[in-house]
Image 1 (cartoon, helix red, strand yellow):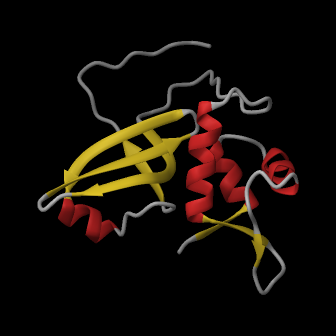
Image 2 (cartoon, one colour):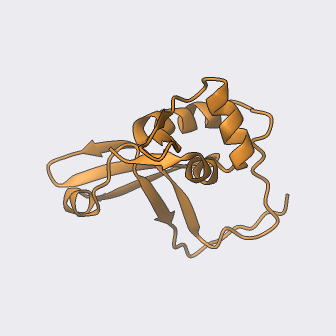
Image 3 (cartoon, one colour):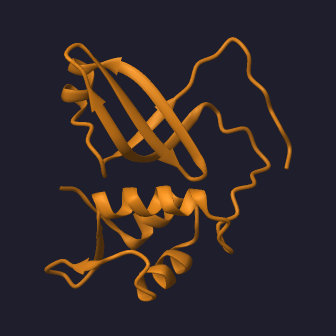
Length: 132
């Protein structure tokens, strides 16, 4: 299972490393230490926490941006539903939950599973831009 440093987790959650560290210190997300002494968060724990966080209105989790997202949403896989041929993958990218339908073969080739870092890329004929 993939694990993430506090800094990596902060980037995926859309918060500062200090905020992620405070959440870990408070026991909101479990951590363990590697052989170098760095604190790591298990991918499955981070995925579950990212879903919980997105449902809440946490202080310090401000996601307003003054630039276009440029169609790339880096996040963490929170669910994978495999069928015989097709699959559904959910990614939590900060406050954004993205769901994609793709082939089972693609999911297996990419090694997508809950807790793995992934980027959803969106191509559309209509793009809406909002300014905070």
